[in-house]
Image 1 (cartoon, rainbow, N blue to C red):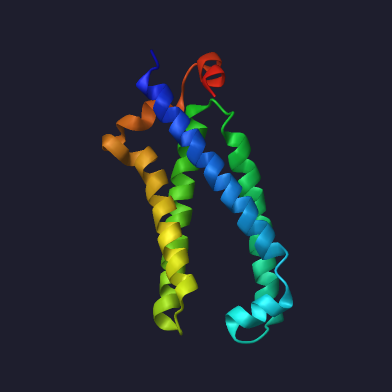
Image 2: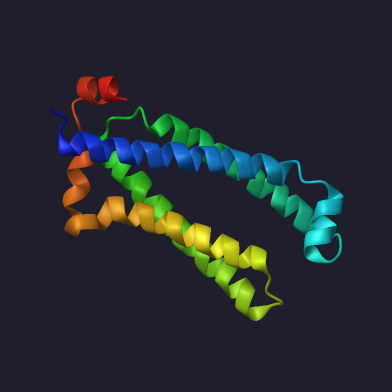
Length: 150
């Protein structure tokens, strides 16, 4: 019989994997975005905006790599801190994009980003704070059982 904590731990590892894949994909897309696409999406080409997008792409690729590898970490405090940091990061990104949506000429891409960022942040918040924080046990399991379950 599979322990409920192992199932929940596997769900968190799946969230890390999903976030890693999306981060690497979006990071590579941002890093390799051609000038024409930037011009079409922003109504004109801006070199500084393009460089900022490339830097954000590098950051997303790095975050994806970290998340892909954090699935093999059995240190509960570290995994909990990762969930807290990502929950905060996605909440702040949601606020930043929402501000841009409501203070400038909004578009459908902002709405899509708001929905995705908010949902991802809520998923990390659920693992960190769900059930009154009782899910905290999923962060630390015996290393042999957690690795064989993956």
